[in-house]
Image (cartoon, rainbow, N blue to C red; front, side, top):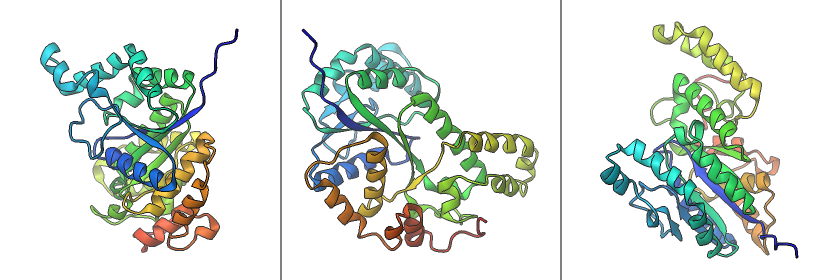
Length: 305
């Protein structure tokens, strides 16, 4: 007798640096999904997150917490967090059983903000492979704080860590510039939003770094690093303001395209209605242009050619 095949289940693996807005995104995306009629469950896999803005349907704290590990094993917070994810990997049956109890709901996995989990450590990729074997069709959603765009050096670092994350996780991947409404909080953008979102002609960033005597010394290194990002041609970003349902709907549409999600009754129409609320350019499917017009209308201090 052939073994029964588990039904395909869809979800988002929400990752990114600390403070990029992952948990807020999960809460906002869950609200959006419920509004479109898509059943959704929130899974907190951050063992250090004690103040969730949502009621988690499944919480890693039921299995292990950073506080307990720090106390019992005398580890620091970073070491304890790594231990917790490795402990989860060793106890995947616990996670899979509880996920099965959630039925066929769309799952939002809220992961920790420790970047090395997604660039160096093997626990998270192995957890994701187990979920895929259990017939989960996942998309990684990587949130990056958009204020890094105003600092060329930091933006180069973001590009490198994003590329490393994409290669390490090996999932369909959507990168998001979060808090786009605060993109110029710490300084004007040097180029238009499309330059940062589409990640093209990065030589212009190296030229900006020439203005600083410290970074100018590393001109050749910067050129090599940006050339590496461009050669792979994988990194691009979708702008997002969590409080703006139109930008949330654009991210959701990108995720659904990436993992091949099949819409339930009325879902696609609800998403298109939200997109119709966007300011301009939606007829051309211009995701970046619509966000730029609304949030960065000046296009930065210089124009990207």
